[in-house]
Image (cartoon, rainbow, N blue to C red; front, side, top):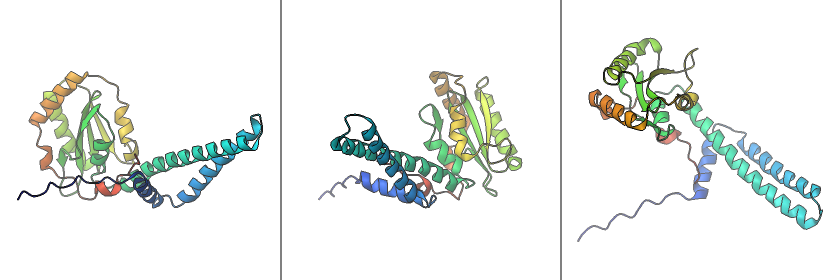
Length: 236
């Protein structure tokens, strides 16, 4: 007798996701409950105030505007929690090996092709180099000490230049030095690069670079980060 087909995995409901989002954020921002209460009350007070200002001033009008303000406050509270959850995520992964791969694989969108696995790793020190290809060209990202990353970055730079001559190439170091980019600003920095190549050229560059690159799957994510534990859940 054939085995029964496994039932599809049940996704968590909206309120379950919301609770998870709140718990995740509150672990970093202990004052979150008071922030949310303040935002909701401010929204309700704003609604009541509008009810008194807009004629005709009547009880039903004040109640209606108060409820509207309350709902607006709830919406603003959800928006605040979502933004703080993103900040909390970046605080948790800042300085953790593998954080760069997590960010570039989840935050760049369709205009960029990236993989959470590095293209070069120093197994002793966990310094790693990542590569992103998009409309802005090729971006090589170093994670770790600049001094120990020199060889890995130069090797990747030469590899790209051999097969994609003329394509813009940018090198970024993640960190907190004078010329470094904090992990929280990495995705924004890459997205701001001017678009220099079209989609057809981008696809060709990806194919050429991959053809001379070591298989991404052969290089593991540097130990230190578990993406499933730092990704801030978002309610749908």
